[in-house]
Length: 184
Image 1 (cartoon, rainbow, N blue to C red):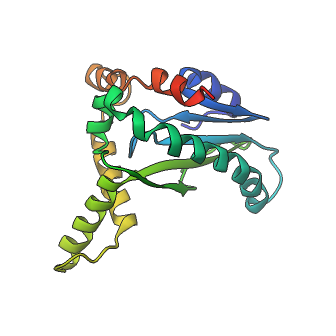
Image 2 (image 1 turned 180 degrees about the vertical axis):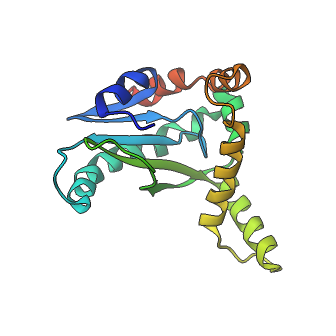
Image 3 (image 1 turned 135 degrees about the vertical axis):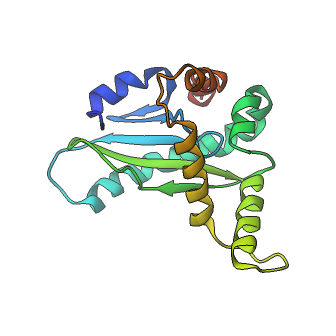
């Protein structure tokens, strides 16, 4: 069930690391990669998507700079999260995804998914295996994301109230990582 802007902000308050002008970014608790965040804008119910996206772009740029500069050096302090997301190697880029299935009328969401060298390697291996290709050809980023989504869905199948799921999420230490990202 999608939450309204205010209810979502209250629910994820301890994981928020960016705030500005009715916009916030928080670390998701079922991450594709290390630092996977969601950028949320409070919007009027009328208007076209391109207008909302244009409003999000400046904030996304600021968030990407923080992710790019602060995440690579911090992974050893969050080993469980890095291991769970199979994150290692240098930062490559941030994927910007407009993929929320359900949003309340007053919210607009954009996922920011930091992508590291380990993810690039996994993407290439999956692409070559799927297409029976030898060598070093690359491709298949969306397929790789889909495979990560399948894993996350499986890991969250009992919901966030399940003791094992809660323990795994707590091991990620997301509130502490949010404080690091929030420090300017």
